[in-house]
Length: 226
Ligand SMILES: CCCCCCCCCCCC(=O)SCCNC(=O)CCNC(=O)[C@H](O)C(C)(C)COP(=O)(O)OP(=O)(O)OC[C@H]1O[C@@H](n2cnc3c(N)ncnc32)[C@H](O)[C@@H]1OP(=O)(O)O
Image 1 (spheres, helix red, strand yellow):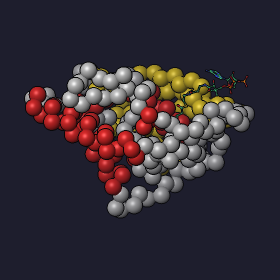
Image 2 (cartoon, protein in one colour; image 1 turned 30 degrees about the vertical axis):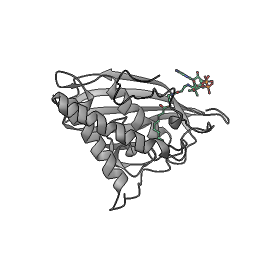
Image 3 (cartoon, protein in one colour; image 1 turned 120 degrees about the vertical axis):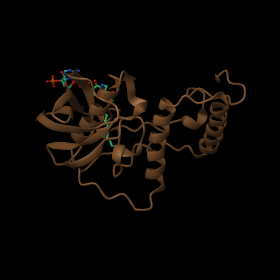
Image 4 (tube, protein in one colour; image 1 turned 60 degrees about the vertical axis):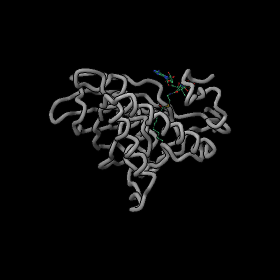
């Protein structure tokens, strides 16, 4: 299946052979061993590219471009898609979301969580939601907040030499609107760890205002579980 756009047909992800994931990997994603993150190298084109990609998405969301600009952009994007398609690799080899030394883990799907510190029991840092995450009337989209919590708590629950685990539930309470374009503080901490079950909580604050809080249960994977 392709898009209706004649000039730059876009294959559906289902039909695009360059987007295959490679072989399934029991045990899930690579582990995060510690919050003591290595410093990103000074000359880091990947980090630079991801930062620009995030900013690009914010500008796409904020702009009201004329048709000529939109057509030119569509052409540029189509050219980049064609250039990247032959470079597609398996999940284990991909760079996107595997750069734990970069803010936001070097990806653009979840909000740009910048870690300030952490230990075996907790993690803290900041996040600034760009215009891309706008739900309406200055507030962040409600779905983008659990996305942040899953990222923060998922990393915490998988950290410090713990075995890989997955989110079983993630309960979010929205206490006040979460503003777009402000630096917010984020904190996640362990509540309990019993057998395979890891209960963790997190909060998102704008200054002293509690915007949202969450509790997650992460269950350690048994051998062979995807
Ligand atoms: C560089 C890379 C960085 C890596 C950094 C990565 C950061 C991002 C991390 C993102 C993490 C994700 O989003 S992971 C993706 C979203 N999650 C998923 O896709 C998970 C889908 N669900 C599952 O696969 C499964 O349901 C599991 C594995 C969670 C659990 O299944 P299971 O293994 O069969 O275990 P099961 O016996 O059911 O449950 C074990 C115990 O947990 C309890 N339990 C299980 N589910 C629940 C529940 N929803 N609510 C209450 N309790 C529950 C059971 O009652 C039981 O308690 P008791 O009887 O023992 O007392």
